[in-house]
Length: 472
Image 1: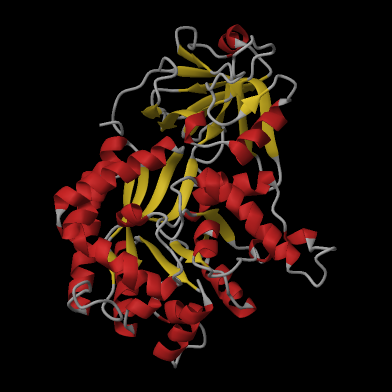
Image 2: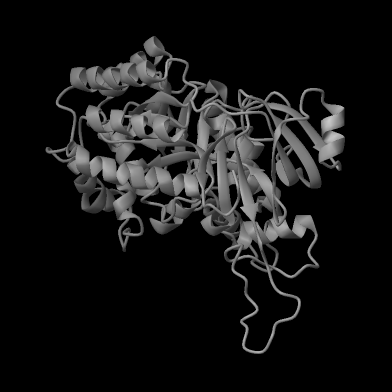
């Protein structure tokens, strides 16, 4: 298993970049990161070569060396919200909105996961896709089936990808063929998956269970309360959706007339905890934001999905200013890509849409706009905080675990011969002409890169994905 494969001391040599804070992106053009046999970062040196790094750290003379010469190391991405069984429907949102889309695409594909052969094929492919895009941690929705949920956890553990894996609960407003038979069965089945996942990874180093009511409209109040009690009894994480679009909010108001808000529905059921991930949060009121902050629940911003399903533009700057903890989610298949790098771009674009919604398009609300550094923070340290791993992953610091990706960029020949294209293709879609500084190279990757630039991915110092373009 990749998660338990032995590793040796390794010095990762070359340029690296990571976020020090929400607004501060550090780009080091020449560095050395020492990772010990446990996958923990033992030292981080800046502006030094290999020999100097070895001199400064006793016992590292014989360490393995892995150098990046035409790119840089970057922390692994954290996907705080995605639906693994919906992978075959990626890009099939058509002209639908959220509630219609669930009936047309989502419920049929998820219900088919009673077929474990089909489930294995789709899950394996999706986990591979996420790893190839540099995602080292993922919060997954599975299906309501216990066996297929457990299968997803098995696959993540075998591949070595950190994962929160949740069995989806719903006892109303879903097709008769795809819902929990009773509140008791919803709780029992959820508990069964929790126990299974904790059995295969007792310390939760790689996979953890997460209680998963799909969203308020698909669960009765009694079911939500029962799941809230289960979360307390098992000390498990919780994930669900909130305030994704206005039609959904109106439906929640109709279904839960005694609740003061969508947030209040979950709060009443004791589902808002420091371990809760709330996806979307596009249309939260000021009071709801205060409650979420008070309960220390977290937010997963899914910009591509919100645009694809015309759900709205989440005012992320306002949520950050309100003190909420935010990460990014791909929300496949509402989102069209398993790439968090794509979500970084989409988050920036959505923040600019919000800015342009100011009274004068000629004088946009620049305060609403996210910078490149801020979006990368949400993709790494922000996401790590959302899933409760802020002390372990998200940056390159001594004592943190080495979750990272190696990014390679393509150089354009200085002088091409007649008939040559002038394109080497070694670095995917990002062309580097030689005059760019390292900050500019990182910017080019953010706005033009994709999985072809990601040639290696590590979780806890273990290689979990490689394109074969470097000697591991």
